[in-house]
Length: 486
Image 1 (cartoon, rainbow, N blue to C red):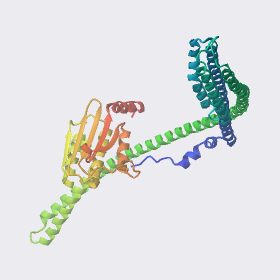
Image 2: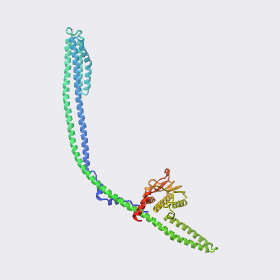
Image 3: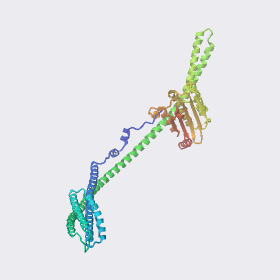
């Protein structure tokens, strides 16, 4: 049986256009790759600089905001101690105790404001010293304010207020105010410097971002042009490759069709030659053997009884002749089953199944739904050969104990199923290049428009071989016959 020979790589490359072979080797140019990496590096540098400059600007802005907080805290502290001093002086001058309310409130709040200043300047050792000095003088001034109130039992216009102590407290408060004023001036200067630093950082950030953006845009424009050239070359190469693939596909299809036609032609020729040889054996060899048998029997009848040795030898010759006739029958049935041509597919399948059981000792159950006298002879021989090849494979490889064959027909088509309970096929065995029997069975089904499958048997045990010829294949065969005038 002829098989379709596969196309080799050298055959395909020899048939492919040179332009397509060159197109398949199109790669991204090195300068395009370099520009891509430069663009990525510029984008990374741009992002890094923006992050650094933004961080610096945010840090300067944080210091700027903290200086404002310090300034507000100093102003609040100054307001608190001024309130305390004004309340003490109003009480001493008027004797009205209502002046003591803001005084006591200020006495309770000045240390809170001072603690707030200490927290705001915790990272500035110089400011911590100023806060400590401010706390010392403030405590002294507050102490003197308290002493003047304690030493003035009868304050008022006509009372005996401790004016000397009040003057000393005022002097101490002036020292406190001078420290606060100095700190306010320093914070104003710091705020001004920080504002300039923030503005400078913003401009630097904008400048760096603008510069790197311009450079990156220029590089990307160049990259775009390079990529356009590359994409154009790639599209041209892909077009050439597609054209080459189409040509190769056409060549493969053409070669496959030619080899398939050749394979099917060889199958038909083989069957015709087998049929011719079978007829020759039956007509010529069979008639000769019959004549020999008749002559030997005639001789046997005329040999005297006392020629015992001669009669025994003649008997052995007749036995060998009978075995030769049986062998001739088996050879003829193997070449072209006479039952198939004379009695139909169903009878031939039953007969072959019985002969298989007789030769191998394996039970072969067959279920045939009808005689199939009206089917195409091509279908008959294809299905018979598949059953014949499958039973041969079962005998050689399956180690089965039973075989079941089903042959039936329905509205969709004709189906042959052969199931054995043997060891089954090894995985991938059906796809091996040397599986000639399987390739031949598949090719026979393709020739009549059918399908051929091999799968594990029921419950994963044994092997299931199935050949199916759809009803549409009959119409196609008739159409081909009508078109060709066969």
